[in-house]
Amino acid sequence: MSYIDGNLLAGEQVVYRTRLHWLLFMGPVLFTAVVLLPIAWFLDNGTWSSYAWIPLALGLFILLATFIKRQSSDFAVTNKRVMMKVGVFSTRSVELLLNKIEAIAVNQSFIGRIFGYGDIVVTGSGGTREAFSHIQGPLEFRRAVQSVTDRLSGPPQTAAPPAGGDAARK
Image (cartoon, rainbow, N blue to C red):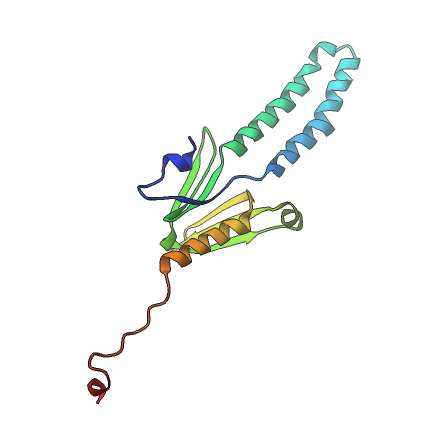
């Protein structure tokens, strides 16, 4: 069970859910391919051939850690609040009521716009600023918060005419 599902309040429903973007794997994959594989090849062709598995195991460990980081991240918009959680052993979680959110900033690089990821900064009342990087679909996340907030606020109320109609105004 995910963090979000385990911490929903009574009557609370998830409107939008996302996690860290898959491009998070690009750094570890490039590091493994460019640095660790040549080291393993060099060790395998020399007198150190019995140690060639060490760089490959290190690359696998880095990829596994990145996979766990992505799987353990959870970002959701519910009909009552915004919930965000990252980490396994050392976790960071933020839960903000929708009526306490003042702004959600989205920062996307050119590559982020192409691949659909970015950074979000949620500003709560009292100046609380929570930043999260490499979120998949940050514009959709912000749009979900705005749509739920609009639904909760409802249509604007108009002032009722004074009792008694025109006679009361004279």
